[in-house]
Image (cartoon, rainbow, N blue to C red; front, side):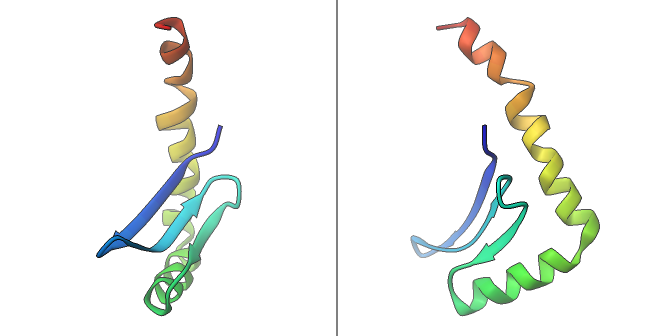
Length: 67
């Protein structure tokens, strides 16, 4: 299971957090600056890593039980 949080502007993805990578990755000049800033913030990075457990791991069983 992978948690992905993407940021878009005008249908263009400029930054993405992936739980498998464990950090933000920028795809545009603006996105790279955002990724560098967010990757330096240890508390925000920890919160994003914890989001996998909050949104994915706690709900995956309930989704499969209803199938």
